[in-house]
Image 1 (tube, rainbow, N blue to C red):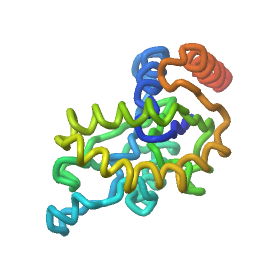
Image 2: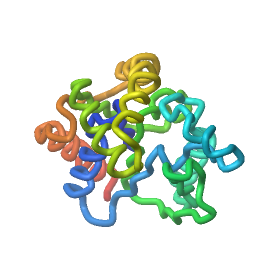
Image 3: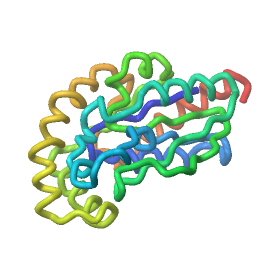
Length: 205
């Protein structure tokens, strides 16, 4: 069973994913982050790497993500890439991922790709107020990605906000479930968990 969890940057997708994993039986869930599949930019100079628009669908290697999901669905293990925001490049190492009963694919752009959408059994869009998303983005990018406040705000105005309106917000229409207030919505997480458990039970897991 493959579940897609999309939504804008800073909407609370990761919190929803963590809560789902905590609620489901241990060892039953594999999480595949879209961010691991950003295209390798090691061939570019560092100043050009830092200008990459991570909020545009062209930045993701969807072909590899789709290929890996198809293999997992068939019961085959895959090697997931490791991507670093600090170097804007892929690591030489990969992560060995074994198939599980539940696979969660999480990322801002996952509903923009028709082939990927078709692989998803349940599509969830995590919605949040733009101001809340901005404050989370500022905190995260400063702490985790070593960016200055000015750099974060400049990037938000130039790419994050326009890309959200152009590519991410419109994919809300593909969602089976919309979760308002992000990861703080305990009711929505509880409903999602129940749906997943019921589906697993129907398949004899």
